[in-house]
Length: 475
Image (cartoon, rainbow, N blue to C red; front, top):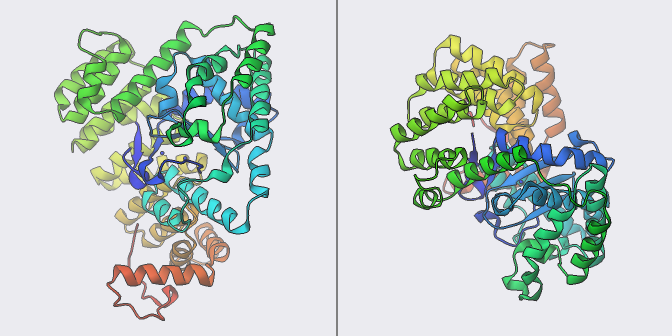
């Protein structure tokens, strides 16, 4: 299920993007993330890095772009995926970005910036990390504290760093027995960007300056590589076409999708895209008819069942959505997002039995993704539905802590701590969060300012969140 986070725009990524961040959106989807991991993990290992320590994230944007941020995070615009002709092109760009991480280029760039700029970047990164897992409002609020971050020229790489990343990328590809031809063909395709004015270039080629010399140097090395003629397998190409169709189906207008994948195209990717397009048009019956043909062909594909669950859930057929979501989670029990999707349907159905089952799925998911704010949000709803108010407030504190909102993390942790039995694991965790997240005076002042704005300047200027009555508030 593609989950769109509207905090950054239309469509679950810390950033140096020249396009306004408000126009961006973050995506979480198990199927697409799995493919990108399959591409990236071998290259990350070839660079001597730990794949578990490198994040790979998706931005819902049709423009070609990819970049890295501190904390070893790689971000890909979905346009980079849909524009690619073959997997080797995406792998080449991935290897290039891994080269920036391995070469510590972000750290070197940031060391030359002023402290204020570094603070601004931290705000952006934290806000995007919040939106990354579904906490859109929190992410937007945090990012708002970093003024004028839409264009971050200081994050641009030097031509020397670009050349280093190119050569590192080719080394990583060779170490994994792959050809660097995809990286060369990608840059060849966009060679025209070299002669365009800075304002008209795509952001990737503003932050990653392109030159004919770089392309020629890469081509010479690829031609000398023993893996020069290695190509993608048919299975790899077929998998890429599927996720391209899924992205296009969700992100493009339905009429455009149906034009791109006409009814005469009976391929699996085309039907995948059309099913999503009809669903977005509100034609659930037609969407499910097409999806049924996909499930008939591949009954053990968890992502088709997940999509059916999403269609039913978002169409208000909550009880009917449980079975396909459950089927998807059973097929891929190690996938946190599938468990969270199932939990959402179980919680919305409302019976105590289903809510308690939802809690079990959420506990597993949050063990795998401890900092997933959307998972904590669902957990807070589940606890609230069962009358477990203190635990609901603790889950809200966890969610706030995960997105770096120290004020709410402290506030809800303190409430939970006061209501929980002393010495229990939940009490200990609430105490830990309250101790670590106690906000600074600046954070308190900013919180009070936002509260006054929300209340129409009715709140006293001296009001402090720690003086609030203990209301039952859940986010």
